Structure formats: structure tokens, C-alpha cells
Length: 315
Image (cartoon, rainbow, N blue to C red; front, side, top):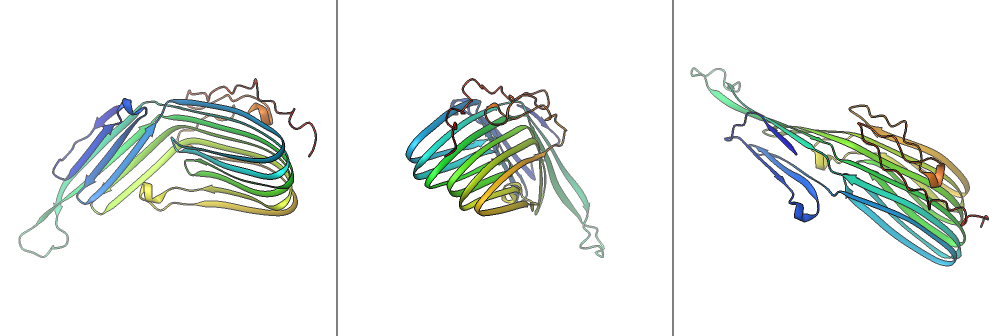
């Protein structure tokens, strides 16, 4: 971690920067900055990790599954599936990797004495002190998450809900079906985060920019009560101290329907090259490659990715 400080006036600015102890099995930093009564806090952490999972389920009976991934550089994934008595084929492949990189923190504080404009008519000129601070965090932490899923079901009913979140780029689905064929693929990539904060007495402005990309593909045929899709781009205004611009699309389908869609979302303040990141092998062909800013997402092990043996016949 690099740390660069500007001119500090300790009388009006208090800044605490601390690093997380390596014995806690994670790396990170905490920033607490105060200008008079205005305080801004930033707490970030990362764990160098790789997680890979390939699973299959096939047969007749009931089925339940729950999984949750949270806190890896703003990448989250939660899913819950359950089915009543019926014929089920379920195949899933997941890969999560997160890597620490350098973090640069720059602090610039100012204290300026100016005439008091609220009392311009007094014979004796009065002066007041205006304090401010600007803090820039440039974080080169990288994360990749991929999830491929294939489901085939016929029976009394299957219910499922999944939510994927890449730093505010959210894809959420829900379904309630008694005959279902579904194939989906999700990818989230993040390579860099930059946070600029401007702190003044009674005023806080924080801007977060990232190089990130999100992709979601879905092909589904269903006969059932509900198929729901929600796509949202949102920012946590409580966390970053500003009003967010939220975009959302919600779609609901009932009865017999077929859905095919391809969604791409992203944000970049230094244009990454994401054109060479094809889809994962088990769902749409290809390996995970490409990258941005001289970093390539990890290679997906496709040796056990084929799940065609589970879906040899329609339910």
C-alpha cells in the first residue's frame, strides 16, 4: 500500500489510516477523516482466495440447495432452489477468485483565512477560517466470479431465486414452475476502484468510479406460475454520501413462455479491453480469457464442465 500526504493542518483535520493485520486472514484498510463536525469513513478489505465448484444432481424426488458469496470486493451471489417430488437434472459450475493489489491514498488538506462576508459593514474587518480536505483512493484489487447453471425439471413444482451483485450492478431472477428447461451464465469482473472524497464543514461529496463488467445470459422454457427478472444499476447513497442514479428493469411472465436474453453492464474510467472474455465452456462455449489493465481473469477448468449426460432427454 502506498500513502502520499499533502499539507495537513491538524487543528481542523483528523485523519486515521490503518491497515488490517495479516493475522486476521484478510488484507485491507480503514480511513476515518473529519473536518470540524463532518466525518467520512471508508472500510475496505480483501482476501486472496480461489474457490471452484462443479456439482451435479439427477434423479426423482425432492431437492434443496442454498449458497451465498459475500464481501469479495463488492461481488455477491446468493441463490436458493427447492423442488417437490419430480424428475430433476441440476448442474452448476462456479469459480470465484480475488487478488490483492496496491492501494494508493492521497490526502490534500487546506486551511484558508478570508474576510467574513456575513459582517461586511463592521468598521473592524473580521476574518474567518475555511477548512477542507480532499482524499483520493486508487485501489488495484481484482476479482472474478462466474456461475453457469443448467436445470431440467418436471413434477409438482420447482422454486428458485438468485441474485448476483457486482458493486451495484444487480441481476435477480425468481421462478415457480412445474415444467422447466433452463440454462444460464453469469460473469462479473472488477479490476480497479477509485474513490474521490471532498470534505468541508457541513458538506461531503464522494465519487466512486470502477473498471468493472457484468454479463448475464439466459435461455429458458417454462410452464408455471411465475418467472421474474430484475436488472438494476444502483449505488449505495448511505455508504458513499450522495444521491444515487438508479436504473431498473423488471419483467414478470406467467403460464407457458420461452425467454432468451443477453445482458451486459459495466463502468469504466480507464477503458478496459473486455472484448476477449468469451463465455464459460459448460454453457455457451469458450474459455474465460481476456482481461483489462494487464490482468487476465483466471482460466476456467473445463475438464468436468460437460453436463450433457444429465440432459439427454427432455423431462
